[in-house]
Length: 410
Ligand code: AMP
Ligand code: MG
Image 1 (cartoon, helix red, strand yellow):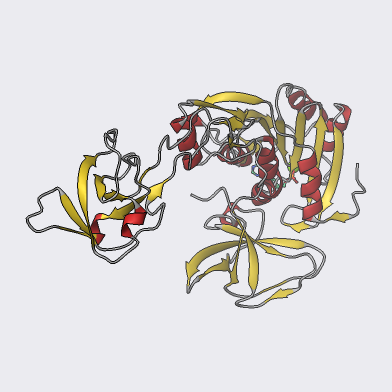
Image 2 (spheres, rainbow, N blue to C red):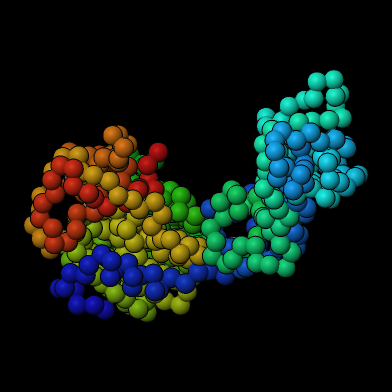
């Protein structure tokens, strides 16, 4: 347990969290389900692709040496090679082959001249063509093995699987890929004041954190499971947190400050969770409990709706991404310029909810008018969190700023 009085910089808290989150064991999934996940193992090519040199253009396959002298050069057209066909003749000096994009390059040819740089021979029929431009060896030729070479590592472990990566795997005839399995994430709300959205409040407030966090988990690639609402008693919190075997991550919200009914820390300790309690030097979201027991990672998030979402973005999503094998835990972090001005005291980094839009060749970030953490309206319409650094006191209009894209936007 850390000294709760010291404020920990956000980067340090995140580094310690990531150290607690190794990537999960692999499962094989169909490629259609692998988009956005990472490879759990190197993949070796079984096929050399393309299997032969082929043409990158519709045009004429030539011997480049034939075009080294004065232009134009008149060549005899030996055959036409279509995509999917096999060339039948070698291209001899003084000849060429008409060729379509993707068709194999005939033997003897070492370059392609695009059709637009040629001219039909008047009355020459289809048998002759004038080449108007020289072409060096390899011109418009897509070489054999440019995409993959049999026996070589095609994609290495940890590679994020985007659509082109999946295309490379399909081209190998591979239909499934090994990826770290999706983390199972249990979500618990705590608070006597809470009721479910389908209940009549009768003086209570609706638990919005649990369903919101569940969606954020799903967007991050995890599988959320709702554990319901625990009351503000030790027994209720303990009963709920005793049912988390088999989960990779447990998220609780509320009950982690210094309020009299804040039992989360106490119960985690009683259950043998090795804990780090930090006051992280950020606003919103100061108190944060992180712990580990066996293969389960625990996060005690703050209760305020916006604080729980912001701390999810800053700490939980990076951890989920690391469990999913991603080296880049903050995808899309970018820079922009401040549209407006900001000031604060030194000592806390602020994560300011902004709406960022592209204009005048840059991304301009405008802070939302409301920045309180108790109401969700202050997060609605935000697209990014603007990082107003720990020691900085003011930012002026046009200043460069770091922006973290929010996963919760529509
Ligand atoms: P706490 O951390 O228990 O002091 O809660 C801080 C604030 O967040 C209080 O105003 C709570 O009512 C509110 N809150 C706590 N849990 C939730 C929840 N699951 N959904 C919406 N608001 C909550
Ligand atoms: Mg409470």
